[in-house]
Image (tube, rainbow, N blue to C red; front, side, top):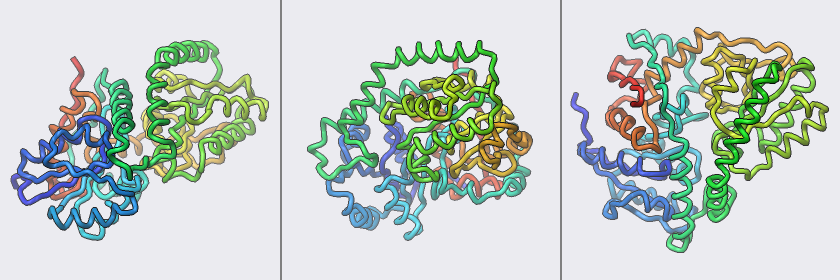
Length: 429
């Protein structure tokens, strides 16, 4: 069957910072589909240059569900496209899609980031179909696929572009606030506060880089057995919506108490901040306070962001709420303890031990089971590419457009034997 957009009408909502959604919309138009974009602030508008297909929403968010219903009817919408499914404006779209039988295309950062992005239908993270699939279901579907697991490229990442597009986006939101009087950020901070944090992070990047290098070197040369804590952004949707904690402080306190109670006295604990941590939560001060409270301040360290690989090479185990970085832990065969809903939190390879017992003697994952799970992701929802770099967008568009136009979602396509050949990643020249 020929892949075509004829008879399809796509409505784009908020996307990742930068031009990816616009490029994707143009590709769908080239396939014969109708495409429109709703923008909720000046940042959304800045990254969608085609005024003919752009629809500004300037009212209060309470009026959005009624406006969405009207747009669906007026434009004959068959498909809704969004990035993340828990923002208030997106939650309304999820409800509308499910109620009306529309196809809901959800993009997210890769479950196997940074070399892949996530494309699913219906929901992502804690709302993903992966949460309901067992390892046996995945192995049965994989029996139809002869492919081997592709390797990640030796050099490919777009964190700098991610930070750049984020700062650019919030600058447009700030200077164009009067044009969208009803807009309210889906996070607690104001637009100006968000913009200042992004700019501050850009300015301090060189200092953080030197601090990371120094602290990592000291930890590497200490010779102590290490346990790693993978921190997340407190305002991130996975933490807010799919975890049992109201704040990152609650998680820090639980981990520190478990480490003090269970870890051997010569073991050390390393807290690694998220690469996009911007200081809105005083993590460093809170970690210092809790370490002093439990009498382990000499054994606790904080690393401000940076790459994870070096620290994982030194670690005995890792703890996180539900960070996607947990998959890098499992790929190395290291014990992992999680606390929130995560697509990879399967009983075959994630520990459920109480923290004191985990720090004392962590159970190792079933590495064979995890590699089956990883292969299933790479055959279904993980698409080579990225949102933020030009190279990453090109890689992504080559494959994901056809996946969106397919009648089957990625998981059904593999189960039914209809999955297209998966493009392999190529090393960066």
